[in-house]
Length: 376
Image (cartoon, rainbow, N blue to C red; front, side, top):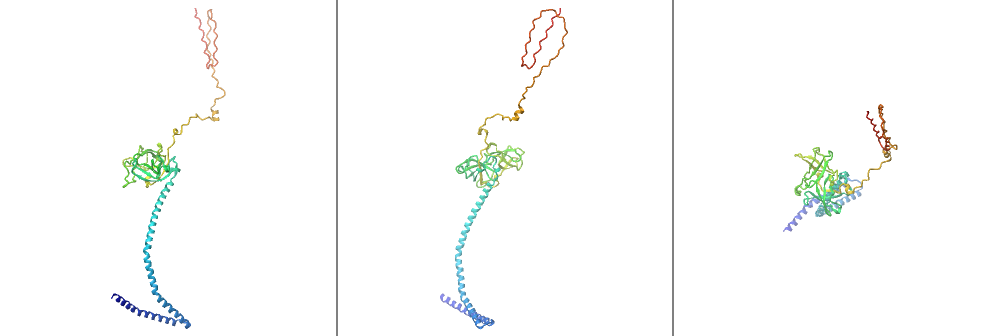
């Protein structure tokens, strides 16, 4: 019954198209006749053109269902393959997002490395071998023998030794306290065991920076929250907001490294805001520093005496060829006593005076005068 009804419906549909087709054919015929009538020229040529136009119109009308079927088939094919194309595009988009993330990470890492490489030579302090600096990536560690430390991915195989200093583009980070084969441990400035001699960059006021962190960092809540070290033994001449640098005293750190900025807290205690904590500390440069050599370590050089005098100096300080004349004794005239009658008495033989030594500086003393005999 269903087939019969469908066939009846198709027959009815076909019969409904017949009047329309007949009407279309009549319209085409009338149009062709009108065109032939209105066009001039040779009747043979007009008949040929009319025949061509009618053939073309009939061909288009005959091929119209075929073109519609072809377009419908093309749409079905595109719809069938659209799902596959969408899946391919989604996979390509996912790969591009992964490459984008990698490119962003590499760009950020390159920017940090460029910031480390663009550090001026005076940022490493005095007496530091900048050519032997080692770039490393660090992570915060809550274990170890100290409270606030970071572990770097560079060790003895990369040339790192105990005592090397770690800093970033902003300032001093810490000092290497232990070294492994491919890793090293850096003691941070805010650790309770950290003691660094510092001074004001402009006022030259000296102080001792003492770390205040006595508890391990909370890796879940505030992993990188530093505790500001205190500046002990600082004078009041230290200025608010002054840049603080290392002094180099003790030989652990070079002189001139930027440490932070000094400020007074509410209790009147000098505190330090670390310069290295201005940005996340994840890349550092580890540089060797062994301190200044002492004369005892280099070997004391024997004293060669005063330097030899030049010819002009020798002539200026040499004594004259003629010795200075010795002072002459000036004779002193004494009054002659009046002669008095003397009794005749035996006189002792005169004693010859002894000659004075030739080298005497002073003349010989005069002989004592003889006393007169007592009168009767």
